Image (cartoon, rainbow, N blue to C red; front, side):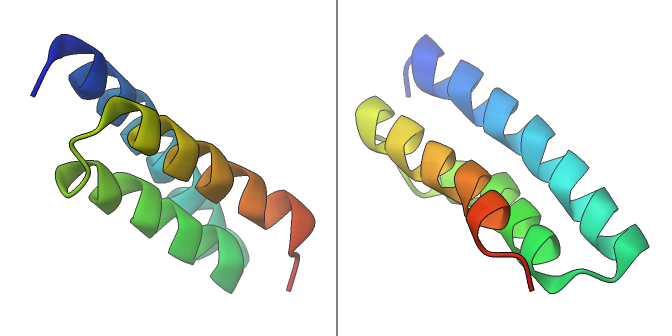
Length: 67
């Protein structure tokens, strides 16, 4: 792991925690699931560009799909 992937993992994990707390408080499934995914996926992705792409997609997903 390099420094950039650690920093991006920290950023996506922090945003994921916010999504998770919001989804739990509002009983909204999409932000809850995306928050959990944002907190977990940096452990499994080692490529920095792929990490950024997946993280950006997971952050945009609740905006476009509101259930």
